[in-house]
Figure (cartoon, rainbow, N blue to C red):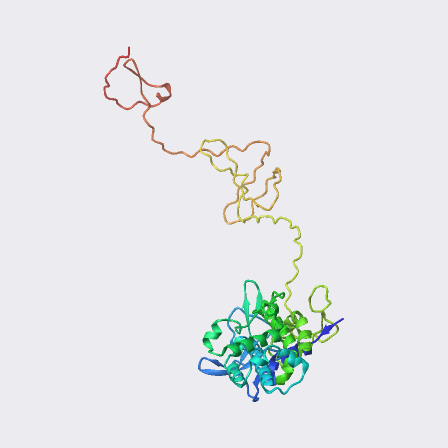
Amino acid sequence: MNTLTNQDVQDFIELLVTFGDVNRLGSDMVILDIDGKPHMIRDGETDKPVQILHNGMIKDENNFIFNPFKMIDGFNPAFNWFYNSRILILSNIVKQIIIKAVELSVSKETEDYDILQLLTNVSESCDKLTISELSEINGADYFRITYNKKTKVADAQTLIFSDEIETTHKFRRKTWTAVRNLMRNLFKLKDDETSLSAYSYHATILSIPELDAKLHVIYNVISVLDPWAKLIGYDLRVEDFKKHLENLESYVRMFAWFTAKATSKDEPNELVVSNNAPTGLPVRNDISIPAVMPQVAPAVAPAMPQMPTPMPTPMNTISPMSVPAPNYGMMPMATPQMVNPFQPTVPAMPQMPMAAPMMSVPPVAPQMVNPFQPTMPAPMPTMSVPMMPAPQYTVMGQYQTPASAMTQAPAPMQQQPVINIK
């Protein structure tokens, strides 16, 4: 079983920082330049040191702090500088190898078979002027990495084979022939190839797709450059890079544990992770538990059936069965009652009369109620209703009044003309 510790994460961070022998890792994870001074990034009108987030650190607002294993949606100057500078360092390594090979070709001081293979179709086009011409080309024109967010693919690219670079640099034709043949030999391209697409990579770690893709492109390129990097005094540590890159996804999870809350330098910072864990999650093996544990959503217990809650009985009220609501001469109405929507409907049971509770108003005398006898409606209140005049009907000119309207004298009427219908 392959286990990983915090030291493995630390070793990979140091490998990235020291890549190309340009930077160093100082105390409290502050990145230093080659002269031993902290690398500074401009923030408005002030410069701030670059610091890597780590377990047990005390955050300093005067530093640019970044997580090397976490891509963020917003702009983090320290994060962007760090990885862009690693790519630019690789670009300059390609440039230096090209120039060193031309120098060896011009001086004819080497008899190494591998170097002579690298200089195939190059030596006859090189002279001292070629060296100075190729020195004018920017490192990013020799090699660069671009990333497509939609496809999650990082592409290795070069401008050496493009027509645009010839308009920028007015070099001799044989200079372009020499550098293009040298690029083909260096990256093992065919005679008609002008693209480095063979070194591109499609991300597989969806939590950090851009970082995953770019780091794999860097690995693909240093794998082919490693034999020649020694010509310029570089050790690209390809095997170490490969080992750490295989554990990248585990490092991302582990680093999230270590830096969940960086407040105190006394926090334990050990965690063992197994790459063979069936769930893909960190496995703890009898070690000190970090002070900050990952937040796990509590399990939701299955809902238990609840008994319906009875509706509270209001105080100082009389049972609605004892006093029916008035219906003003219409059909008897059901007395409205409060209904609990969560309580199943149960057939009404006859209720025995109950004594009125003690109250400030005179209690209502209890009455015996026959539950099988319908409750008589309350007497209809007396009110004054204006009577409308009874309708009049005309039959052959004679006025007649319906019998239903005889209870009240009709209002005086005006003489109406009589119409005879034949």
